[in-house]
Amino acid sequence: MFSRQALFWFSFPYDLPGSDARFLRAARDNCAYHIRRCPEYRAICREEGFAPGQLRTIEDLSRLPVLPTLFFKRRAVFSMPSWRMAMEVTSSGTSGSFSRIGFDWGSILAGIPMVLRLGFYHRLISCKPANCVVLGYKPHRSSRAGVARTMFALTFLSPPLRRAYALKMEQGRYVPDLDGAVRALERFARSPFPTRIIGFPSYLWFGLKRMEELGMSLSLPPGSHIVLAGGWKQHHSRQVERPVLYGLARRVLGVEEDRIHELFGAVEHPVFFNACKNHRFHIPAYARVLIRDVRTLDPVPLGQPGLVNLISPLMTATPTLSVMTDDLGVLEPGEACGCGLSSPTLTLLGRAGLRDITTCAAGAAQALGKGEAF
Image (cartoon, rainbow, N blue to C red; front, side, top):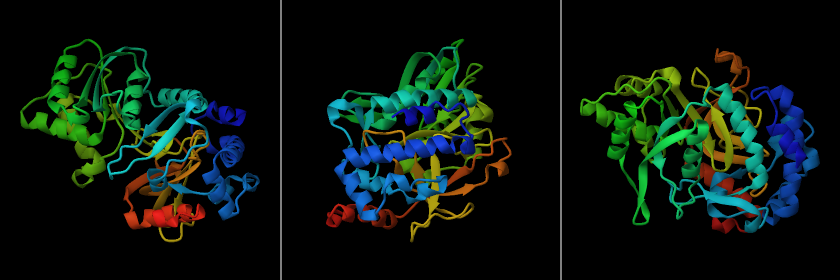
């Protein structure tokens, strides 16, 4: 699928109009591939009367069959046999169920230039070695959690010297070790090399709050960064506003706001959204985002909230071309951000109710003749 490579090698990571033609070709090819190789996806397209040839303009992306993340949590759907996949990963499963998503070698190789271009643009990539504190899962052979692999991969944005983890596998389950992560931070603060803190914002908040209560403060070496990914998940009720979290990081670690980076993505949509200097998620050229009305699922104009529909032709092992998340969000003109990027911005507003997402998933299930499963 050379159209996929042409898109993900695109040199201008936020030029949506300049990438529209490449995106459409890649989306058509990706859709056709899944229709040929995945019986479930073929049945859904047939039920909705959709064919790849209907993608003539970028606006036609709204016609793609949309599969909710809940659908992947209830059903394993693949477009190639497991022996052809590079790996199979799962979502975090905080709701009690998790998605199983296959990664093909082509998607991994296509994703590398995307990560490099976005990483260099946002000054996340450095040749200077760094010590890493990962506020997340330590990789383990018994775990296929996608977030663990993602955070491990993020340690390679600069050459990693040492890694310390806040969640470690013990007796078959992950247990928190925030005290160990704090001790590692103390050691790394004395190193001449920068420190990279990577992980869940909730764990950063809990760890820094505990340090502040104990009267602890550090001055991390120059060039240190904090990279936040994964959201607050089950700690959503305790979420704090960005200025509060960033202020705590400055007081306890000496890391200024311009050294704090935010990422947004999903196992079902492995295209990373990197926050700009104003902490807004601009849509990269390698993805498109639609906001859909919660009741009708029709696309809504800029400025109106709704369900977040993520579109990208990266994956061929699993039909994740158009995925509906359980996030509520709003798209706004990029010019309003003031950072210099014209790509629209995505603001996440919270989670939708399970009933809304279940309704979306039921539509896909009914196309397969198994509506009762939802």
